[in-house]
Image (tube, rainbow, N blue to C red; front, top):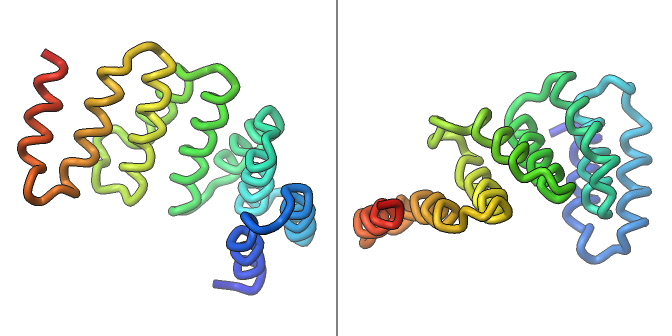
Length: 160
């Protein structure tokens, strides 16, 4: 991890104990050290805009960071955070499409369960709470050694 990344991580690690404007200023200062086309810096700027509740400003920044090209884990994080942002902006159908496009069929992805959680929120917003519950139960089942098979079976029954 380079010095810049370490300093960014330190800001985020301490974010809960600092006022939001201070966190935002610290991230903005770090982003200013990087070129305008640095995908990770753009991603961090998007994240801090999102963090302070300025989702409308975060959305194009997430899209720009993805366009510039991010490696994992930032790529997956950016997709999840963009999906969460567009959901918060009242577009749960778009959020669900983003998550499905990126994570469908990739249960081995380290962020697959997180993507499922955000997809479930979008499904609930769309009025399909039962489908949301099934998605969450299926994501949870592999983490339940003694009950995973039963939870999966019950989840399947919910769709019948």
